[in-house]
Image 1 (cartoon, rainbow, N blue to C red):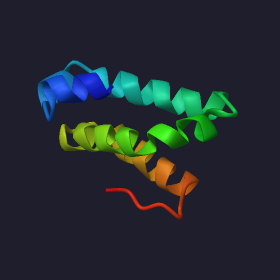
Image 2: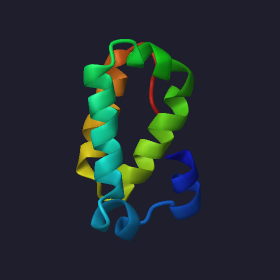
Image 3: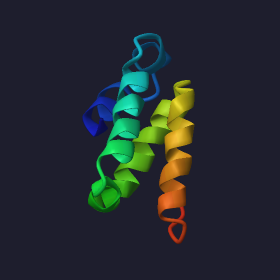
Length: 81
């Protein structure tokens, strides 16, 4: 996702209209719901993940905001950008 964010940046056509952002968010949701240790595993890439989710949010992917909020709830002591 980081590579796509670097290549496409805020691009509603890529992230929203082609549903790439929705598919990525769906995968993240399934990972957090079905993979018990996923939240602990994601800890070391949290900042990069939040940065990417911000790109998706600004590109119009509504589901990305929900995932960003979920990440914030997982680690309430750390603030997101």
